[in-house]
Length: 111
Image 1 (cartoon, rainbow, N blue to C red):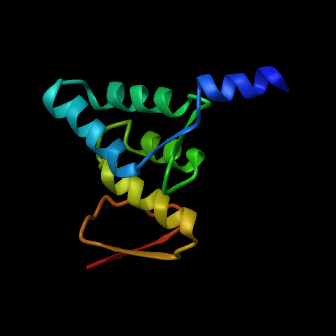
Image 2 (cartoon, helix red, strand yellow):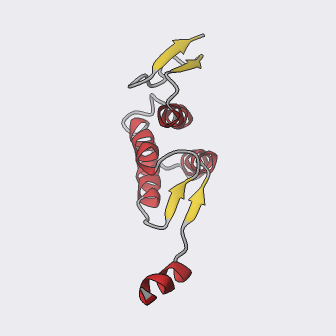
């Protein structure tokens, strides 16, 4: 128990807002020139840390959202995070202007 308590002091659990994940993806791809797949891999590895969790959505949904945007970039990173937030909240429908918005397990209503 003592070592567990000490490890919590050394490596406290931290939370990262999903908007910060989106901003990080933007900086990695637009400013540093990383390929979309490489940026997603970096963020998945970041979320794989045991002492880090996303604020607004479950970690598993955040990773799933990241992986949705990995293959071609057809699904934007921000749209994938909105999709994950909608799934995690139990919202059955998302209204969007984006044709490629992911529609797995939620209803996508194009405007």
